[in-house]
Image 1 (spheres, rainbow, N blue to C red):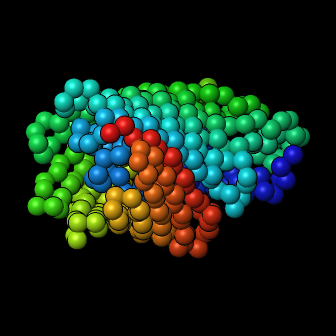
Image 2: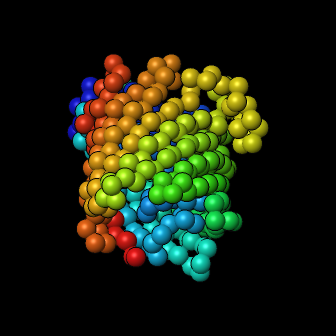
Image 3: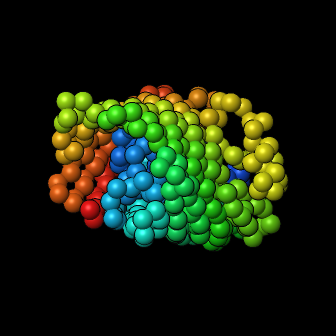
Length: 347
């Protein structure tokens, strides 16, 4: 049995991070808000405007239209909040395939294991012990991308989400589901050997979660906007730098609003809710890769600012990437967070 003190700390941090173990918050589940792969994690969550890769499904499905590979598959793993518990983790499986000259089909499966939660007849950590059920969420989606010109592409993704939550005074664990869609736009313009790219994506717009007590919760709808510049020099060296912002599209004080009305009301939320990522990626001979970045999260919002670093290696069709986070805020709940991604590419 997990110690009660550890259990309470775990629940508090899950609340702060928006994890689906509790209904009282306006949006869920946390899985849809977390970066999923090591490349993006090593560059401060950059992904909406970077070059296409096997994991473009999560950030901006439109990028696949300019993917120079016939197909790819990738699996990513990250333990979560390991400073508090050893039973939380996230797994992400993604793949894409080219069909025709200008079309790409893609798909992904996300799984977040929040570990065991101690259930009592008096609430979390209070009253008589009942059980320790496991709480987990998952999502599956299918995407389509097409280039509309040599410089511009558009993509759509449709998603089914299943989440678990506590109900009836924390006595039982129940499940709920929702449907969502992403729409993305991607622009690229070459300058000789250099390349300027920009991306815009609106993610997780869909039905709200419905609970047994008639309460509802938004999916973590968001809008990402970014720009990236990739430079090649001395033939063997490539350096890419980018800046991206992520704005939540969930209203702050109106959990009962409709999905589209809520998204519009979210523009009245404090500007401090917008997070920013500044990242860089250096590649040598298309083989060895180093990454770093700075992620800014206002102290009035989540206070999860951090430095990020990562590395990768490419060998023929195989790809291996890793990333590590260094929290800068006073709270260290993200200490020891790392990602690892394995990929296989079909040229």
